Amino acid sequence: MVIGYETEDPLFESGFKWISIKLAAVITFIFVLQLIYPPLTDMFSEIPSRIFFEPWRIITHIFLHSTTNITHIFYNMFGLVLFGAILEKIVGWRRFLTIFFIAGIVASIGSIVVSFLQGTQNIPSIGASGAIFGVIGALAVLRPRMIVYVLYFPMPMIAAAFFWALIDIIGLFNPFDYINNSAHLFGMFFGIVFALAIRQRFGEPFFVKKRSADIHIKEEEFEDWEERWMGRKKKKRE
Image 1 (cartoon, helix red, strand yellow):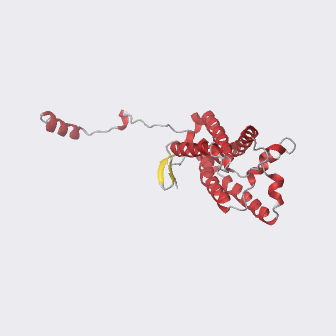
Image 2 (cartoon, one colour):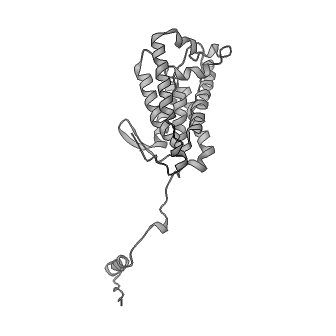
Image 3 (cartoon, helix red, strand yellow):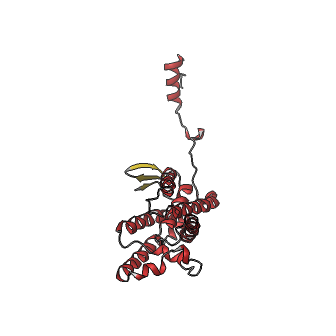
């Protein structure tokens, strides 16, 4: 559940195209195809050792998910629809697609480099998590004070993003963790960088300061305070 993502810019409201839901529908359809024809997963997954000869895998792996673990696609699609719709409403559908796909590509390239360093270049990787983390990173910059419920606890978006990034950083050093943590981190990094570039136009302040102009005290209330605490008598009014 998310609170406080509304935008007052009618341009982007009128141009809202529900791209995140359409992407989720396409990914879900491909998931059904994976169930019907299992070799499809191996044909289009990200396998670092094959990437130089089959570069399309950098993109196609985003649309694939584990057929043995239904929670993989469930949580990814939930995050895509929720955070994707919010980001699209803020920056427009074109920028949202740019963030989603480039974050996915950056996540793929970054995780490939890490896999060669770790000697795991023959292990396949699938999923839209890197692209979705790009969306999360962008929201953490553009809507840092937006409230997100993480494990039933409300926290600002920027804190939630930090929490998820910390989990992935810890996961990098866990030999029994089979999540592509580096992809998440690289995707989020791109989302943050992209959002910083457009923050002046689409972002909100990290902190809100109360302006003196926003503080209104009636004269009668001020005189009552003076009489009570300062011992001064009220002024006579005609």
